[in-house]
Image (cartoon, each protein chain N blue to C red):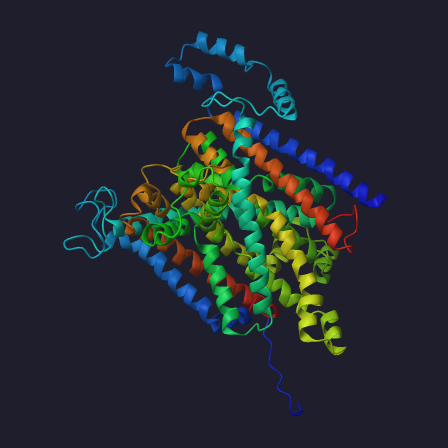
Length: 323
Length: 291
């Protein structure tokens, strides 16, 4: 137990170091970029007057040595201050937190859906690896891998929302259901179906994992003992086959956020991703960079949790050891 | 050899055996043929189909097969969709290929150094890789483009900078595994330099998984490029499959063909490359067949 605590402690320290490194990388990217905040503000004011720019630099502390600026930046992030949005004139963190729930709802539903359906299909097809169902899973997952999410999203809108009118075109809620608890819940689910459905490409991983487990020695032993096939598959194999799927799902949070960016854009979903894209067009760099750092923190936390869950469900992992 | 009544299948190893395995894989061969056709079409298509992708050639909103209209219809300004797909394919494939090459180069250098030397070099490089892994890749690409400005080169750079950790991890794992092999130890014993061992002894043997990952990287780069172009974050003067969809997005509900055809082009291209990658994986590693 002490060893576990020590392992977690080391992981925590590494995670904080990693976040610090992300902040440093973002900071240096800003330095590399042509022009600084002062030139940009000057352009907005319609002036390139050197005296005015120098005044701006002094006001914002841009004339200080780079290292001092970096320390100040890190200090601000450590105090959860991600800066002030130049478009909304509000703290960036508040803007992100306002939209966090929508993104979590979208990404969370997609992840749960993907893992559950993926494992089910994986188990089903792994039992008959040469069947046509099994081969079609391979082809469909390759197809899913090669399809841009925004395109399938648009096609879903076209077919389900525009042509058949079964599901809403976009947005997170429908004004018609305001105030009605049951209506609101159904409404929310309806809006989730489309965005969540195509983020699901886990079946291939689950199938590969299941195939590998089904070939292992202890499964052969279980079969040799005369255990019922159902017991072998669901009790012995599934529990072990799920481990890599869950791990992969935890490590996919970054990709999920990337996907959510495009999904939110297409479906007008009021989340963090849409805010990031809009910030670019509004030249709102504090918001964009704030979202970058916040997302990296989310990924780091997700990895940390995955690591923890992994240790708990698979005691073979050496605690505190190297990966 | 005396006949024992057991059929022993001759096993071929090396490149030739893998090539033969690949040819026996029907979906993979189909993927290869389709991809070859796509490459030929994007090279010669714009020359043969002499319609500019940027000019208004017909009334806008003409559907595919409409009288007097181009084969795949026109967009909201009356530009030819087919011409756009032919010209846009060039941009898409070129950016994806350069970005993938860039990605694999960084990944290979970082991964091979980490895997071969191990120790503190490995720790340092892998911690460095981790920084790029925790930043959601598309968001990071957006930040790079935002800071450097849109443009084909910056976009290629952004894709390369965000995708390399995957290749680095794979290369590291392969080098880590192979450096313990007897023949690598033998090369070291006869006094080969580290550089020679890395690139002449280990690299050729590490190629199979790297090649498979290269095909995946190309597909991901195509999707990335399409995504960035769709969001309108690329050079506005270039036509690509993604930018066609992005510009026509607002009209998709009334004129499906404007986004359907460019998207289909991406899906077919991506699928054909994925099938090739899948075939390569099976060919190099017969044990994993069908997974």
